[in-house]
Image (cartoon, helix red, strand yellow):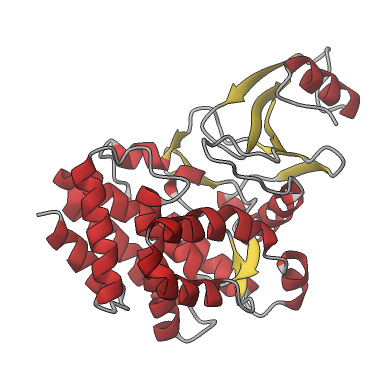
Length: 334
C-alpha cells in the first residue's frame, strides 16, 4: 500500500491516475491539524483538490486504532451531503478502496476555519445560519431512508472514533457516570434515525467571505441526530468558557441556531430529540477535558473545573432542554 505522506509516492500515484500531469503543472502542500489521516492540498493545473488517506493508528498520545476503510464512508457521506446542500459541500472526485485514498474538490485556499474565526471573536450569524440549516436539511432528507441506512448502518467506526474515546475513556476517569453514560450509549448505538455526520463542528466548516464549505465526513453513520447536535453545540459551550468576554454573543448564536434547527426538524418527536441531545452534550462537554481528545484551547485548570462542574450539574439536575443549559453555563462562568 502506498503512503501519501511520502511526497514522491503521492506524486507518482496522482500521475498514474491522471489527476495531475507535467504539461499543466502541479504542486502539493501537506495540511496539518487532523489526527486521523494524511491530507494533501494539490494544485493540478487550474484545479485545486484535497487528497486524503486514512491512518489505522491515529496521531494521538494514547493508542487510538480505527479501520482505515472509513475513507469509503467519508466518500459516500460527502456525496450525499453534496447532493442535498451542493452550495455548501465540495464535490467528490474519486475513491481508491485498495489504498484508502479519497479525493474531492478543495475549499479555496483563502478560506479560514470557522473555529479560528470564533476563537478570535469574529461572529458571522449568516455563517451560523448556513451551518445549522445545512445540518437540518440533511437530517430531514435522510431520515427513514432504507437505502442510506444500508450504506451507513454499521456503527463500528462511530464507536471507535466517538463512543470509545469520548464516552468510554471519560467514564474510566469518572466511574460514577457509568449508568448515565450507558443510557446515552444505548440511544446513540441503537436503531438509526438519520444520516449523522459524526464530526459536525466549526473545525470542519471553512469560511470564504459569506460562503461555507462543510468537510470531513469519515464518522458518518446512520444513527441518532442528537450526536450531531451535541458535538456541534459542545464547541460553542467550550468557547463560552474560553472567551468569557464574548459569552453573550456565543450563547446567543448557539440559541439562535438551535431554535432554527428545532423549528425545522420534522422527522421525530422534538421533545425526545432535545432530551437525547442535552444528555449527549453533558457527556461530550466533560469529554473535551477528560476524554482521549481534549480541546487544545482549554488550558487553564479553572476553566477545566468549570466544564466538569457544569457537566455534572446538567446530569445531576436532570436538565433536558437547551435553554436551561445555556442559562447554566452563563451562571457558571460568572
